[in-house]
Image 1 (cartoon, one colour):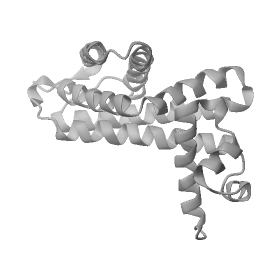
Image 2 (tube, helix red, strand yellow):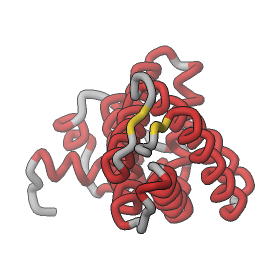
Image 3 (tube, rainbow, N blue to C red):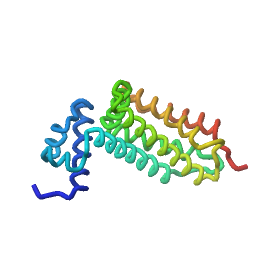
Image 4 (cartoon, helix red, strand yellow):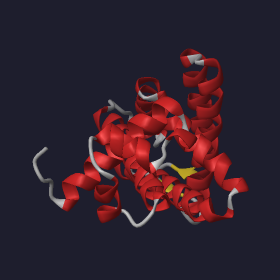
Length: 205
């Protein structure tokens, strides 16, 4: 195998870890399993990651980044009525996210598994906190983008509706992972957007 630059090794190991853990679960993602999936040695892993926890933190950033990119692309492509405020934008973003969830449920199941595991494992709590900071930042970015497209603004600190959005999407994601009812989840997300906009959005007259 050709010698890879450190950044390329890191990238390959992250993608290998996502495949292993998305397919077989968090516990299956040992360093040995990850390097075997990537076709690398343990030395290659320790050259670019100080620990498995560092790899998990990178996985969180990767998955949240993909979620945000998918939702943002859907928001930007949506045909909207600015007079309706940011609801159309956020519904489009939610549907983009739902498409991501359907396409890669293993990644989202891994994020849920990581959260629940971290509740019992103090050493992993920083990873879970980083996970939810990343979720909140992604939600805030979507809210800002939706407001900018429609001329609306949000009441109070943006952190408040961002937290509400994260909580609502979290619940919808978990429910979908259980029942795989996409139509019902789409309706749930639409209702969640309506509630969020009614509570927090200020639409220009």
